[in-house]
Amino acid sequence: MRVHRNRCGLDVHKKVIAACLLREDAGGNSVTEKRLFGSMTRELHALAQWLCAAQVTAVASYPSLGQTPRSTRAHSHPRARFTAAPSS
Image (cartoon, rainbow, N blue to C red; front, side, top):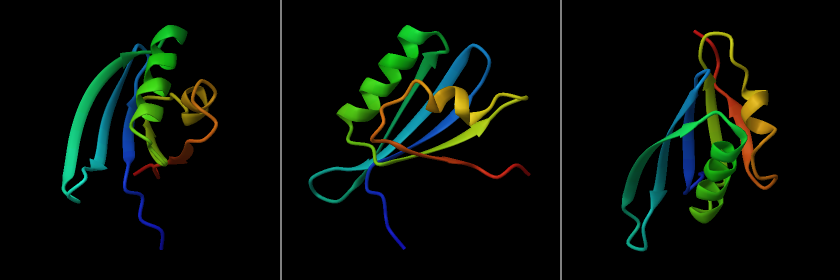
């Protein structure tokens, strides 16, 4: 099983995306950073840039109330790998 050192969870809503970034610092300690992004193209580009700057290798998206991970995937950097969280 592959361990992703830099990863992010997204909670996708209609007008806002909550992002929680988990990454390792130089000492191997976990660092958490949380941010909110809007759902318009400019904000989605800002989210993609933030993920790339953090060298994120995996993103898990949990769609909220009918939203699909595809809408987030379409505006993100092609190097990021997306996984939709299973619905409960």
